Amino acid sequence: MGKRRTFVGFGFGPIQSGLFLYEAFRSGNFDRLVVAEIVPDVVEALRRAGGSYCVNVAAAGGLEIHEVRGVEVLNPTVPADREALTAVLADADAVWLSVGIIGATIMPATAPAAPTDTGTRTRKRVGTCVIRWRKPSAN
Image (cartoon, rainbow, N blue to C red; front, side, top):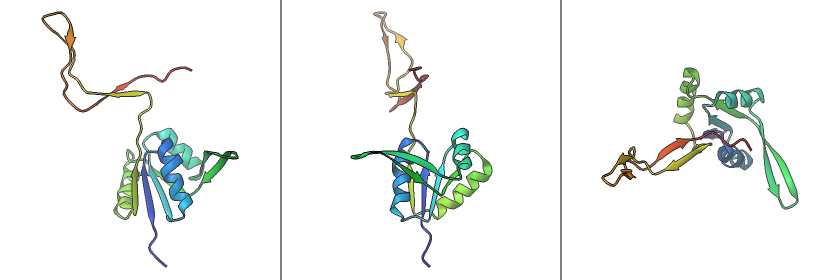
């Protein structure tokens, strides 16, 4: 019997769950599917579902629903899960990072606006980007 192949994904948003992890499952190339996720509600929901979730796929004939099974979810903010994740990563065959930001704007990082001699405010660039959080719209 050959070595078990392990896929590890970071984050369980739409790209990880609907693309990377979904394709790893469909390929049949991995015996173990592990995802690291820090949102407690997401971790608990996936665990309650026994490591299964569904993906909606728009196909030529209409909407198809595909089930992904056998996913282990680990929360690296929990010490026991972090230790388990470290062990899994040491032997992983594929590691994919997919972390998105919902309700945020990414923009060039600037220093706080400062008054100039003309009374306008200028900003000095101090980094590559900054994340500005905002509440999702109600609609």
